Structures are given as structure tokens and as C-alpha cells.
Length: 166
Image (cartoon, rainbow, N blue to C red; front, side):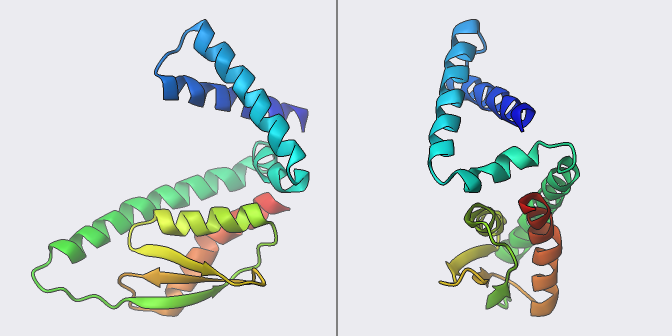
């Protein structure tokens, strides 16, 4: 687990350098200090929840993280094209729907990640999380087969998140 924290610290420090648009020793040192501080704070706030990120960098979990990244990137590109076609077509033919998607995720962080992945994909927005955290309500701009849409979300987004959660 210590190696995972080191990887996260380095990634956060590099993200800091990107944010400040400087890659010198001062920016990297500041990024490292901020990264350590962020991890310290998150460890104090509901410690078990934050370990989802740390687990993502374990060798046994890297495949799930890579799958999630590849699936999300593919869906992002595909949905951008689909939404552009809908918007640019002379006749607006959309079949919008509110879908209730049952989920098996248990960790609040994993549920939030799933909701955000869905909302970041053009044409879909997570509208609500059920109070018992067993389902999400999703608005889809254009859906022809509700069951196929549910299956795609569960297979491409929820399954890799479940692997990271274990």
C-alpha cells in the first residue's frame, strides 16, 4: 500500500505542475508538499473510502483501471459523435428516457465515480442516487434500447469500478 501512496503523491505533484504551468524544482516541491497534505487530510476523513484510489495503483488492480480508462475514452468519443449527429440533423429525432440503473457498488467514492463517469459522457446525466445507494437515475438524450444501455453502463463502467472496490 505504501508504493501506491508514493505513486499517488508523484501523480498529484505532477498535476500541480500542470496546473501552475511550471516544471521546475520549486513547483515540484510545492506539488509534493500539497500532495502529502491532501493525502493526510483524506486519510483522516473516512479513511476506508479514500483507499479506492490507492488500490487503483496496485499491480493487481491496474488492469481494471486500464479497462475503465479505455472504455470511458471510447464511450466519450462515440457519444460525442452521436450527440453531434443528433444536434446537427435537420429533424430532431430523439428518444430521451429516464433510466433507473440498479448498481452493486458499496463504496460512496465508487458510486460517485460511476455517477460522474456517466455525467461526463455527452448525452447522459446522472440525475439522482437512491437513498439506499442501490440505484442511479440517469437521463439519456437518445436511447433506442433501455436494457442495452443499462448493460453497457454496467459492463463498461460499473464492473471495473467493482474490481477496484474489492
